[in-house]
Image (cartoon, rainbow, N blue to C red; front, side, top):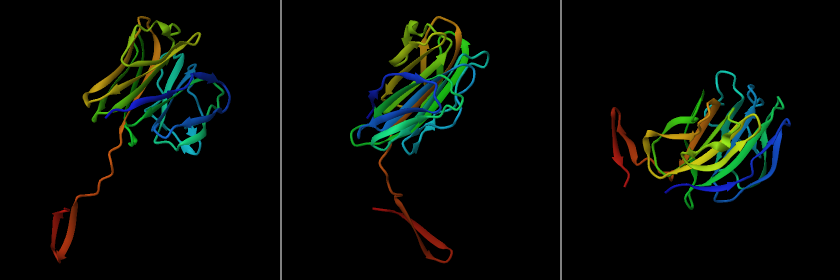
Length: 236
């Protein structure tokens, strides 16, 4: 079974050190918490990992921005099966840069849990930004992707792989995010891209999450029956 999208909060920005977002509530059935960041300028956001209450979030891949004269960078952070309840999301920002943040949640199938599946990303200066593609070995995934860069006309995107979370002109820069529900495995690699005719600098990153399988015991038992001898038998 597939994941479904959960709550999508309003995108916002700040330049404080750190950035804190109070009372981020994760419902009992929301098993993936994703925070997508766009930082303005050629300098990466500094200060380390994001936290949600007492839990440390994990970065999907690396920060992505164009190699030559980047105008913004993209990051994606996640927490699977977060503690239910209210907590404060903290985004370190020791350089006091302008950081735009988007919080999104997803739900595993009823009664299930989630696990990280894959991440991929790339950067360039070109038309049609893309995260590249990543192999999804199992079905039931939800994929999140963000692009950030010099496309201040980001609202002119004519198509994207999945469903729009936002496509925003931030003035001299722009950013977009989307999600895609993938029911079946994609061994050839799942692409995440945006169709945009303007050539600009950009960085993009994606991450996928699948259902965590139920815990199973090793179904073989080994027994030592004497020196130099042993046997294994299937547990029935």
